[in-house]
Image (cartoon, rainbow, N blue to C red):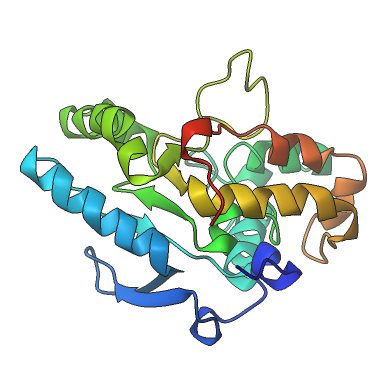
Length: 225
């Protein structure tokens, strides 16, 4: 697999890359993109889950640099809510704003969704996983997702993951490929440009590496492909 800086940073059109496939969302028929191996693995998992009366749908797949920038800047400007509110009502301090956004949102160029290996399943709202359906879905994923190569990227904080992005029960990564990209990203981080985007200058004071490194890996799923 060709792991280049375009793939790592999301600065490409997935239509132009042979390893990506286009498919329609189950939810709204929008076009989504993933690496082919990832999508095939998800379809296998989805079929298996259906037998247990669990419905799995992808709500977010590949995300371009430009789309991640829209999300980040929307939260920075207040047009997208953070915890249900306009962040600027509560603070205009750039460091406080960035740290709040970083609880759940990576800066453009550094989202794992750029790689076509990571998916959000069913909902990106924490409250969903407190419902009966959401609870059953998450418990099923904890037990079975690894059989299909998927690992929960952002688990609850613990001794092995003491910081970084907050827990996301919806975010699952196809480890046989994503681990290789993550490892390359770590090695090349000094050469990857941050910005320009609204608030990017604050990353002179934020250790972005700590956010990137503090992820959960399911070691049994990591293999050479």
